[in-house]
Image 1 (cartoon, rainbow, N blue to C red):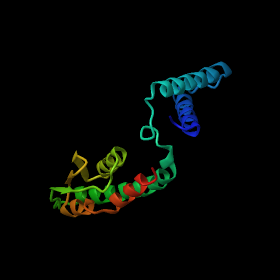
Image 2 (image 1 turned 30 degrees about the vertical axis):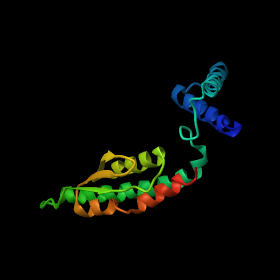
Image 3 (image 1 turned 180 degrees about the vertical axis):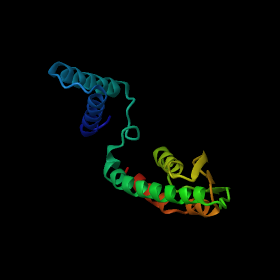
Image 4 (image 1 turned 45 degrees about the vertical axis):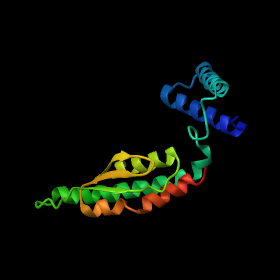
Length: 161
């Protein structure tokens, strides 16, 4: 059974999402949105379909500190890819690299694989529990994903479970 704090946070997130999508702030509609969020939380609890991995509030502090770092890495990589595109010699050297991620959970593996794909110049082609296959635009970018700072930071986020 999930703790009350977990269910309360789920209700708040659902209600905030409803407000974001509806854009209406009339009393009746605000109450209807709150009632809908409450019904979903109660039904989800009864059906036991919400777990700590599906709504990981225990990771919120570490995730919020990871996002700025990831945005900075995306910007740096976008700049590098832009320089490669503008260079008339197109100094690309496409490569595929395989490496073992250090994450243990599905959330950690998905976060790591998606972070690699969000970073321009790299894409996660295959992701399993034991190994990632990553395509990189340059050999340097390919070498950069092996035993990387991203891997360490995602593992740190994952450790707040």
